[in-house]
Image (cartoon, rainbow, N blue to C red; front, side, top):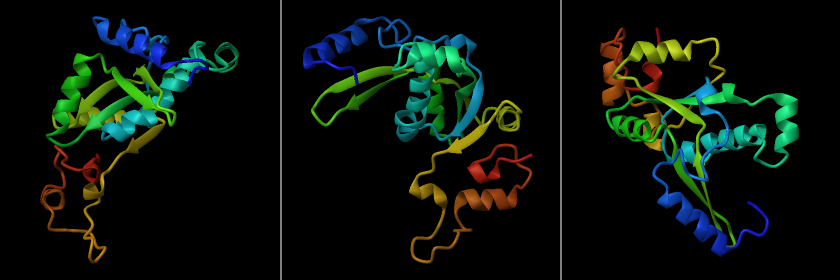
Length: 199
């Protein structure tokens, strides 16, 4: 949060953001060179939690290294741009096609609005996600990315329903559709679940 940023400044920043023709041209857009970004993190399940946390933290790091964040100039000189930590999102389920399409239409940019305890709202356009793969379209491309030497972290966000555990017994639900599919099609290249991503 920038010192002295009043509600009036927030209004001007918000107005500037929404009156621009694209997120790329927004004054809140990343100031680092996104065309130089490479994938260091593959994240499965790009939902709101990931976009408000992991992706936002990476964006903040890249801004600092580019010279715009706190300690930016010195950080940039000391440790490089950190653009090798770009995120490629991965969707597994049919509903993830919507995230693929929305992010692609926005050059994988989106707006994050931080709400501070005092009522201040602080918007930013997040740029750390630079690519998105929909596994049902090309599972081999996903597997290749997961096993690439440049991929340093594979992270995933799984909601409580995705653990496939019976709440009463604590045991794995072998009768769930995804588990049944994995058991019946062990060589399937169209994985319906994170656990079936394998070579």
